[in-house]
Image (cartoon, rainbow, N blue to C red; front, side, top):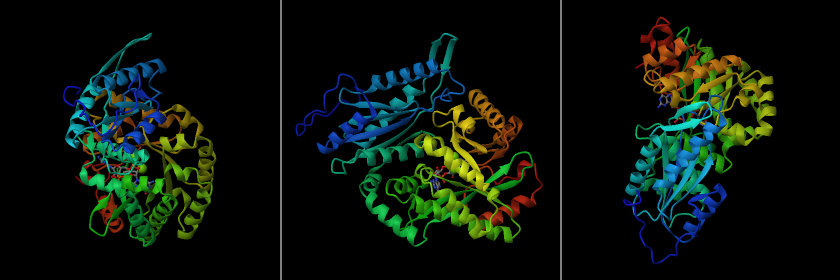
Length: 452
Ligand code: C2E
Ligand code: MG
Ligand code: MG
């Protein structure tokens, strides 16, 4: 890459601060990004999610994890130019700042080189013998225009959003295009619009079916927020959530989703549809001591039994609020609601959470499920995660089930529940009710029950 993307001399600005090593601590990295912005230098901030095959501490020994990370950093460094910098944000996440790239296409090219380099297997020698670590990196980039805002956190949030979306793409790379620069610059505008939309009840909640693998019956749905703006464009739920987190709107969003979901459960119940619903909570909600009481009120307002509601938390949210998380979870469980750990395996997953917290469901991240029937190592991981869930008296739910062979294999592995396009995408509430009737009418335990 250094030959491909040699830095452009920019006489108008001095070089970035000198550093002996391209690696910076996360705080220094953000200061570096701010410095670039102040000097109106161009830059692309990449968030790289490594998705290491050994990232589950449950399945990996510490020295092996350290060696794998060291090798990943070596590969990142080997493609950086002298002006570029990077930081190890967590054991599975690296931030890279590519300085002075003349166009987004070059950022894309750089990301491909980085992805291909990181994807090569890593052979590690440990005291227990040789081991192989495979990474499945996803790269999200935020292209910062020289005249854009100077807040590195906003650029980082945009890169994180792109990275989350890149996880869904075959290429596993997404550099935000010029239009998204505008989005980034206009984040404040989007926030104002979102505030109004929340106030005017203009957001929507869609429902994605969850199916019990043993019986082949639908047990309920996950509630997922949707927002179509007045100009007809839709905004991704990940972006909605990140704006809400950043701008103090999360309580409003969560209350809206919670009440909409419970209201629909009440309507469905009157139609003979006894569904269960899961809603997503963000890190800020976990730190809100008033939230469990609010859940109790919402359940009695809509007359819904507490065991019909599950609240989903991600590991990263739990890590952020490790101290308050336990009390929060106990109160939720005292109400009688379920608690799921979402996207399990995408963070630096640990046994400790499963032992320490009163969780009822483990949601296995779709990145492990996608290649289940072709990738033996993913199969071993999924198998181990199902066993892990059962060891801790939790139900195992596989996310991202897209076809019948995957559903069958999960059933064979003893997985309890499945969710994914194989059964159905997230649908508007009335569509979900019709889907439920159709699905329930088909004899259970046949794959034809699934919607293609
Ligand atoms: P999540 O909670 O893990 O939700 C599952 C995501 O995977 C959904 O994306 C869903 O549409 C997608 N998905 C489901 N089945 C499949 C499949 O078979 N293949 C593929 N490729 N994807 C599948 P969506 O709706 O875009 O939501 C993305 C994320 O946004 C959610 O991930 C969740 O973290 C967040 N989110 C959504 N609604 C809310 C909300 O009301 N509040 C908060 N705090 N976050 C939300
Ligand atoms: Mg979820
Ligand atoms: Mg999930």
